[in-house]
Amino acid sequence: MRAGQSLFDQMDDLNHLYCLMDGHIKIQSFDQHAEPTFLSYLTPGSIFPIRGLKSGSYHHYRAEAICTLKVIVLPVELMRGFVISNHQFTLAVLDRMELVLRSTEKMMKRTVTSCAKLRVEQSLQVIREKYADSENGQERIPFKITIKDLATISGTTRETTGLVLKDLKSDNRLKYQKKMMCFAMNGV
Image (cartoon, rainbow, N blue to C red; front, side):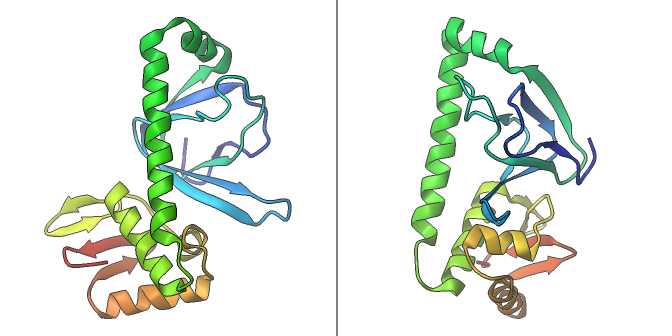
């Protein structure tokens, strides 16, 4: 699967689960006006969607490849059978759910502030901690993140997000070129 292709859209029938073997996926949900309400990224090793695994009938978000992917496609009914019959698999799913909840809670705690600049900076900190790879004294996000996507994550406008990125770049705390982010060790 290539960058820009969707695995599924929000409200599509839930017929398959996926295991991401290589690449990165952007997941995003939208409100009734087609405005984004949630955005996150999936990394290799992710099994998704977890929401709906027990008895769901549709997808709660859109999943889009942001680079070339390798995925394993699994029939949802087969996976539901594993949840019922395989104790180890059920525990692995619960572990994954706990990790997702902990990560979401951490993001919410860090970004609940009325200061838009601080929300952008704290969102960048979470992104850095969650996805960055260390390389040559810097920490690099291995996939592209648009200013618009970062604005959605931080709950700010594109303009505010762009200004914060500009300030961080001028302070040499962040490099942002062609949608790729690289943090200085003393960065955000």
